[in-house]
Image (cartoon, rainbow, N blue to C red; front, side):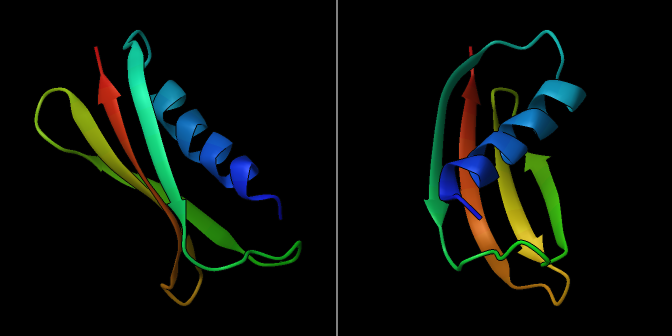
Length: 72
């Protein structure tokens, strides 16, 4: 699966759960490949008032991609 698509999935999580918050920056790092039939979980947690830490994990818990997002 194309790496920037994983970044878009993480950004979509923010769009759905932090509607109305303007994103200032999104920094991501790809850790391991994701293949077409791999089940993945996109998840994240807020970090203070103006940031969040996001990840794409495989069903066995391996982190496949990580991202830090800052809000305005």
